[in-house]
Image (tube, rainbow, N blue to C red; front, side, top):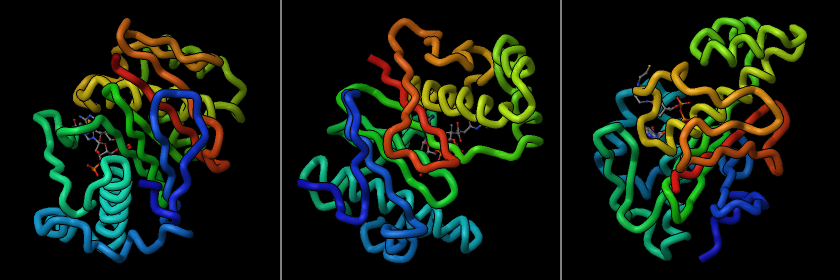
Length: 214
Ligand SMILES: CC(C)(COP(=O)(O)OP(=O)(O)OC[C@H]1O[C@@H](n2cnc3c(N)ncnc32)[C@H](O)[C@@H]1OP(=O)(O)O)[C@@H](O)C(=O)NCCC(=O)NCCS
């Protein structure tokens, strides 16, 4: 079944379907129409303020529609459970979801997968947050011209989050523990995991990465 017409399937040679939804534009309906969510999901969203609730709802609505199209099933009927690390799972496929501002990016794959999209932050935010990274990554970022720091930081941060999501640990594993690097190609700290930057179709001002745990 094709993905919802308000979403964009990104071109890729990687073994995953990549679906981007702009919930500030064509996919704005996902912030309001929560009819595919379970009662439990609606109650969970109610715990946040209105903006955060709409953002979380949009992410889950997009995810349900993407999984529904991929599995050829009713989006509302798919059972999404959380594993012990908080990673959402369904029985019949591997997937990962990330939100940045009003963008939602979903990957569906045969292999365990992690995806991350991030808005490029202000310089000061990047300079603070880079302390969380591996010491060698920090040194690489410190060697960059100041104007390049935010873009360099967010590139390695997106790679790191994609990697940690593919491992299923999320940030329960210290993001400073593994060296992935700021260079042209990400290093993989784990023999079973490959990490890739995503460029095609990612809007200006955002950075995205994906990792597969094969
Ligand atoms: C998962 C995590 C990396 C998300 O990063 P983020 O940039 O804030 O948010 P993103 O939108 O990119 O990703 C959120 C999605 O990641 C997924 N996710 C959550 N835990 C995950 C895990 N352990 N492994 C893989 N994916 C996970 C979920 O789909 C979540 O979306 P949902 O809230 O709709 O279910 C991070 O929040 C995390 O590790 N949380 C677990 C709790 C934890 O250990 N916290 C310690 C904080 S120091």
